[in-house]
Length: 331
Image 1 (cartoon, rainbow, N blue to C red):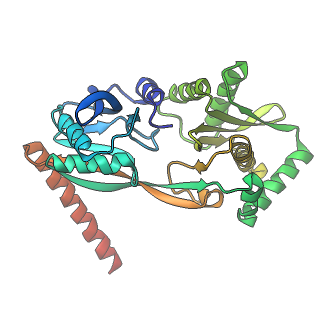
Image 2: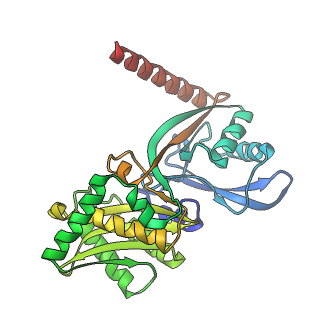
Image 3: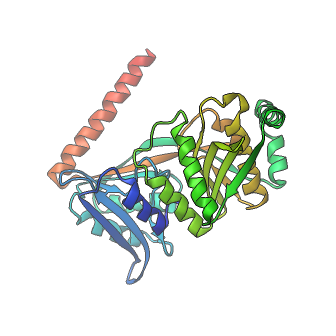
């Protein structure tokens, strides 16, 4: 989801709070040249700032748009060398990254070989679920009893009290535009803070619909949408990107009922191999998922340049201070 040209196009057009001072799309090559095998999107907010990956709070993962894999150390050294010549490359910060990913390992090795001092930092926890044989039925049996009971009681309560239904919108159609409007109404009446960039989510939903990867779930109660979730299914993985429900409907557990319906759809209809809750260690995710991993950032300092040396000193002084504070707190 996060390494396609369409993702970066929507993020750059609609997801950034302000235009960056510079945008760079670095072509990635195998040693010896030839056709590009990937593209890396970088930016700089201002003339004094570091070189950054094109990512922000919407990005649960950052990496290049792959055309083909870059696997040789020489390929990463060549890329790092060209990045080093960009304005602002005294300090480079890329986040959030897959710790086990090819990009993370290759970029760290390439920057180090070019003379950078490289460090990692924690970004957030990521809860996910590798699916197993048996589909949703087997998965549901393994969920905590409290979660299963909550969803089943909520369904019975809805059946007794209201006319309700769940729609899952997947493709461009009049229903898609109605679904976007319904999603926005639910989000505006939920407990969540307003979107910092209101055009981003409609753009993402339309982009995913055009690609056939959208699963926009809507729970309707007496003709009104009261819960909405945006899931995106790509390459055998379901990404749970956004969820919201109207405040005041907590007693019906409409969010949990909708999550269960979408989970059943992606397992039994789409046949995904993994479901990913993306960003954050929210407690409720432990009930739905089975595994946790961490996303990290990579920060690199060119210590042959004064700005790189100063940033390196500040970074390590900050780490030392936090370590001392943590040690004192345990005494």
